[in-house]
Image (cartoon, rainbow over all chains, first blue to last red; front, side, top):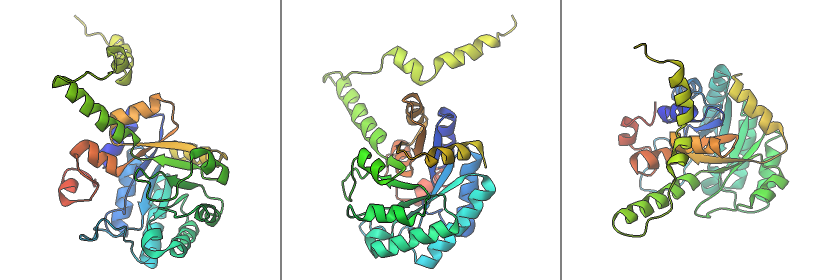
Length: 223
Length: 69
């Protein structure tokens, strides 16, 4: 995952990157090691959540979280590492579905107290829960994630902005568009209709050929 | 604070919504920048999907394939 962070930062250095740290994959020291790894590779912020790790199997993908105290400990370790690294921490709780809104809200307040810079309460279930979550952030920016499966309450962008959400993440749009486009291209190769594709010029822009050629011309090999 | 973190903090102090697309590889990242987005998300599930065509399950195999660090 750290190499994926490095690739994205290198490909798009002008974008400010949030890197997905999941649970931190272990104890407090593992969380800190992961944050340092992402920070060194150019992430502006790292997401750490309070799910169990390793993920318990046989639960139909349920979002199971650690108890509140270990969740706070994990957050404190993450805050310390982010401060050392000079980056921001996004603290996420997944407690809403398995433990209820009050527990999720209590965790958000604890994460704010621990020094988290950005907050995310996963899967709010009603219109009323979102402003309550934002209020619990105590002035720190609140984030929302769209659900492709539509499993939780999610207003449109304009409404999110109106109630005070500062970031809305669309995690799957590029992935879903890519899968559809690749399938269509391959169907075309099997004799089906050819879908519209990027022109050679569009491809050259995407891979920044111009930038490379301008560097290339500065360093001609002596003949 | 690193410059990219300070820039993100400043951006989030503005009372506006930032739309943050997720991606899993360099091309997705590059096109996010080309489209003019200020922020992006390196999504674990997108990395897993684009690289291994697998769900984001933190499986041992995926970690051996470089997911963790």
